[in-house]
Image 1 (cartoon, rainbow, N blue to C red):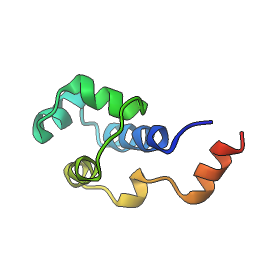
Image 2: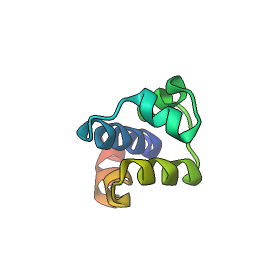
Image 3: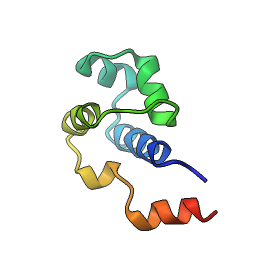
Image 4: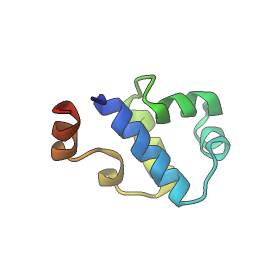
Length: 79
């Protein structure tokens, strides 16, 4: 079972790597450490809506790429 923050983190990483952008580039542009972004992507730290918005804006992706659909969350919780 994966918490929602882990699914969000995985989706952030997927969106970032699809665009061939490094953690260091994202972190530098939004004013955080690359190690903190790494923890966000692993789902080991909570992330604010504001920070997610900054990441979505920077990656130029749709919010639906980052937030898991309810069915995905339900599937994870039922495993």
